Length: 168
Image 1: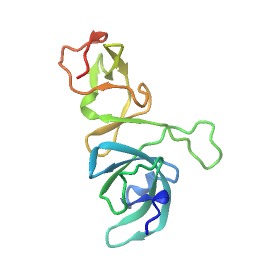
Image 2: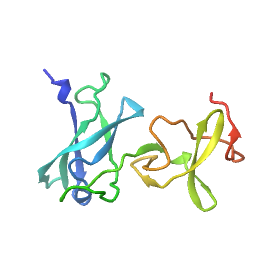
Image 3: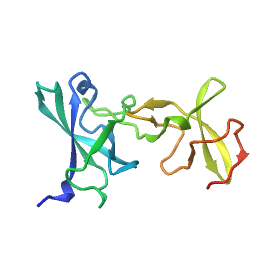
């Protein structure tokens, strides 16, 4: 019988990339069964052996919050979120910035900088962001957005800061 309280992801990470992954690093988990939902997690363990046949290292990723829809042996994709510079951390550790993952197509350019539009009080509000690539069609934004904010993904090119919008 599976212990669902300790459910975790086992990801094979390419040897050439594993040096950028560390215990405690934030991760984003996507289940094949729910491709539009992202589940936050973190690296729990890097198994200290390599698979010579596949040139990979096994990395165990724990879910930050368990969801009843997550079941053993489901197909998954895992993205590791890049670190921010260490800030007042203990020796040998690195602080990891929290990031919000959004679709790449939500990011636009305005006046030579990356921006996104969020909905605030029925208006589109432009926010400057510094996106970092994730796997697939998503980017991580560690400043300029808060979890749960409504980001405008597809909008006419005429959309501007403070434009009135209606959410469908």
